[in-house]
Image (cartoon, rainbow, N blue to C red; front, side, top):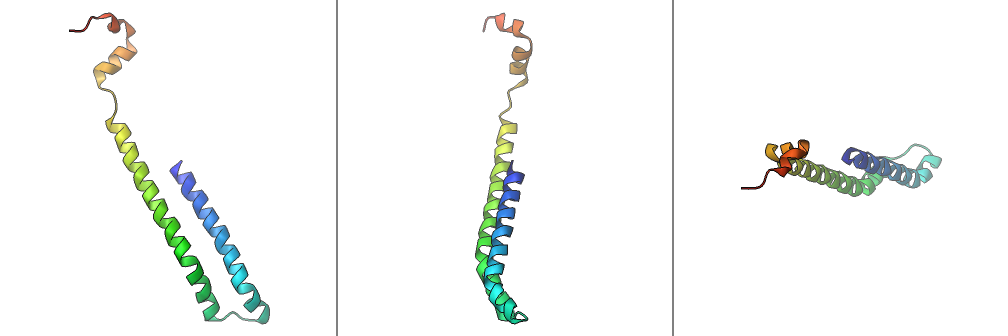
Length: 95
């Protein structure tokens, strides 16, 4: 699931970036070639949202990895698995 969330965030970022470029560059493109300043304006506008999404994605992935390690370490010991697999063992009185 984390890969899907990252992909969705990346797609949303790409779509909003496209809208931003279209809005900023529509006027200059209708007048002719685009100036470097126009491209820098797009870059400044998109830089912060891109960094935020990428940072959140990295933190989300590290949290997911830590969570999966916790799940691995919280596995039941093998005697408990035996009790689950062979229910007759449950009839043995404790102690």
